[in-house]
Image (tube, rainbow, N blue to C red; front, side, top):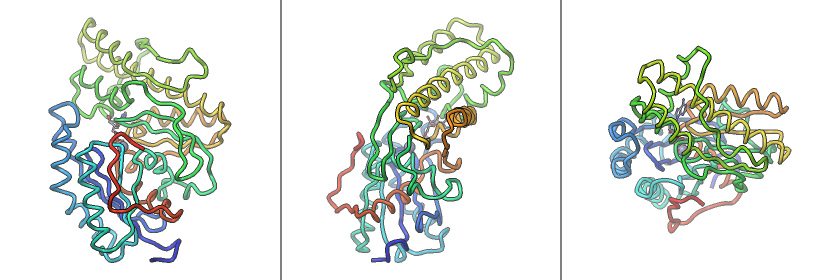
Length: 342
Ligand code: KG4
Ligand code: ZN
């Protein structure tokens, strides 16, 4: 057992299509390896669970080897194993959980189960990207904007995060992916839609719907309507490259408007002075800028992850796992995966 405050945590993340392993030492990232199967899913326009699971099974050991090599450590240096327990795809989660349990059992190393969404929020404080550990920053408002989730949280501690708003249908990343599919722009949709949006410089965007804004108290989201609006607009318009850029710009603006307004509400309702937002969609520069100006206007401090920690990674799992372990959390080998979240 290491002295508390001096430990190395191995993080394992396999909830979706990224096989990731990282080593973190007292909140500092020693290595963070990610091997993605995204290229194998591209032709299907979305993640195929069976392909994702097979990829994890094939690559997890080599990703671990790389992470140890990068950190110049061996498995004997590891004091704690942190693994994503959920939410995620069942087969994918099981691969990482079985691997983590085997390492824990063989090396008699403590095991901790980590909530993937909480880790996305706390990725804001990782490494030099964050300005230190969350520590005494609690309570604050957290947000996850990813391919599978769009939720707002009140964060009172590492093990005390409650949802105060969530999407009723599609997640934001999913909406980006579907719009890209409608426009035949490939998968994943987020980066290409952002690039197309940036090409649209002229005035005269399309007014796509912004859902659930009427009730001032509503913190939930809905993005299925805008996806349908894009579908019909594209079906009926002159199908030019210019129109594609215009749609991407207008769609992105509408989505960012909604996120901005809901975040403003959450900050005002709770009186929080800090916002931490993570997840793959936080890669989006226009969204980062809008959150920055909103926080400046509200006098709120904004924390966003470094780009390498926006998408799925194991550094965020290791860092949160380490924090939870230091608070006394420990799982046993009977810990089950929680695909629906917990
Ligand atoms: O967090 P993440 O890697 O995986 C999940 O846990 O879901 O997020 C992936 C999602 C995809 O839907 C992808 O299209 C979106 O993040 N994304 C973006 C951008 N980069 C990735 N969405 C908007 N703009 C981007 N630049
Ligand atoms: Zn994720």
